[in-house]
Image 1: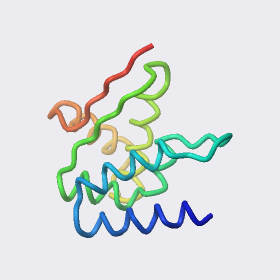
Image 2 (image 1 turned 90 degrees about the horizontal axis):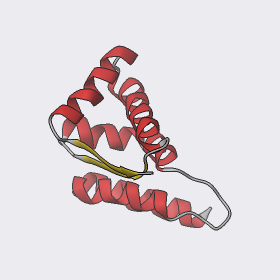
Image 3 (image 1 turned 120 degrees about the horizontal axis):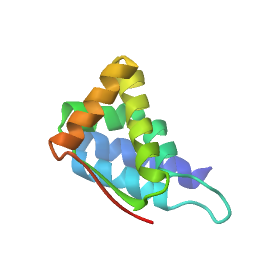
Image 4 (image 1 turned 45 degrees about the vertical axis):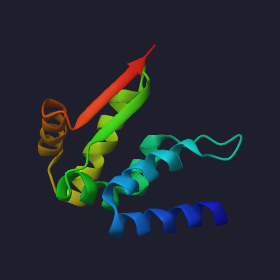
Length: 114
């Protein structure tokens, strides 16, 4: 779809020139979904996994998650672990440790409510 292609081009453009803007664009893209469809931030994290990995692992980006405490935090951790495995070449165990280290160093922050 044209809007999705435009968002992808915007993300690629930001990814090469401004890492912080690219991270914000991923989050914004997840929030801007067509009426009646269900696209979650976890879908966008996996869809843009190469860029997410580059931003977090290579450029030191921080990850902020805000949403429902019921499933979202665990789902985002799982998506970040998938990105680390697929794009960082980590084992599942190493990916879990990596995401935990992001939490411990304050680079992964969750604000969730029920």
